[in-house]
Image (cartoon, rainbow, N blue to C red; front, side, top):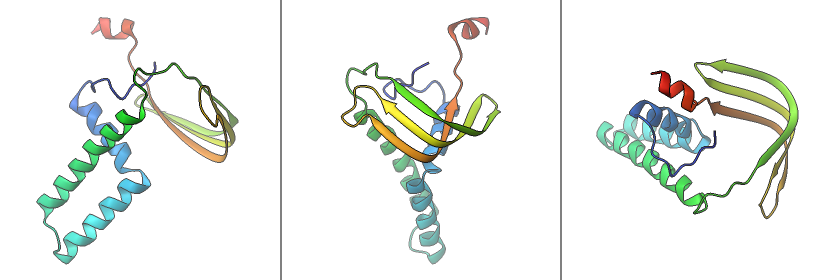
Length: 133
């Protein structure tokens, strides 16, 4: 199933999971660590820290939405590489790849070679599964 950032998130739990991924990015970790240091020094309050992280979460979603073409294109991504490891925990797949080649159709520079890549993917319900509930 394709992921389209414009679609509303199904639940607060899904939204929290996505925010946790954004916060686990280098930028998110750096922001969190900086705010922690500021709090320890007394430069900012806990309320300010929480508001700043909430704003970060919201702005990341907006930024990803504006990066997606309107209407969304049906571009395809091809990945070739050596699978170093894979894990599935509660319908979340983590793939570790080595010596990867990414090819994106309909891109200005469609080829990208990467030594190591980590892909995190979420399984979604198929229409059949959602009807069973």
